[in-house]
Image (cartoon, rainbow, N blue to C red; front, side, top):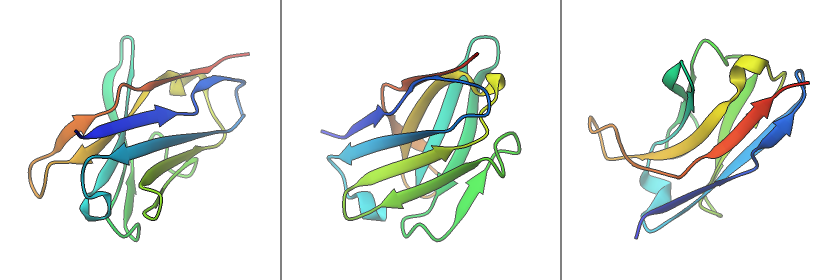
Length: 119
């Protein structure tokens, strides 16, 4: 019953911005740490960002720090990733994922949305 549905992907020029959304259902969203992860050919999986249930604590990979912002709207069960100053190296399939609980990592992922950064 757990569902995570990403949206907002597409083609964007270098230096541009994009906003990704993840609609969550089938679990208590307000109690879950949430994550964004990306995957690209040749680079494999890369954790991008994390956010705590209240949205008060966030973490970012060094590769996106200062350019990406993770947030959540608990009233709408939605996870957000605002991406600015996009680079070609940001091209990847982006997934949202939920925590399986303390110390249990990520137990559910969405199907992903493709971001292509190219001129």
